[in-house]
Length: 150
Image 1 (cartoon, rainbow, N blue to C red):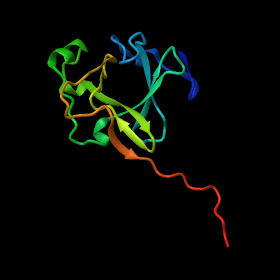
Image 2 (image 1 turned 90 degrees about the vertical axis):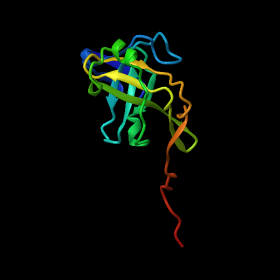
Image 3 (image 1 turned 60 degrees about the vertical axis):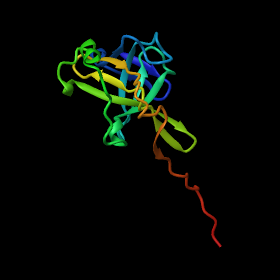
């Protein structure tokens, strides 16, 4: 199926790979289907693109790229609702935002995806150990295109 994106133009995505958030994502409860798009630069960042809204996409990543001891305390009931029977079936992502020159991650609202069925859910953790704007990395300063000499 061809999906329209505002960042990449039309993309061909196999419908079997669509990720379904039955309860939507916070702020977008009616948007249920997304496609996970790898940018090709092997940076570890992906785009979670809404299937039928070209302008709606989130940058996501595995939180352990930046917080190595991150563990989302997922209740067994939530895993069961996603059809996860083995922890290896679950992939966790966080939504990344850019605030000034810093990339932040929402560690308090992780996205859990069943890698076999592509059912997904955004959790809201009650543990205040994690933040919704956890600093992940500072972006480099842009270099001038030309420099003055002598």
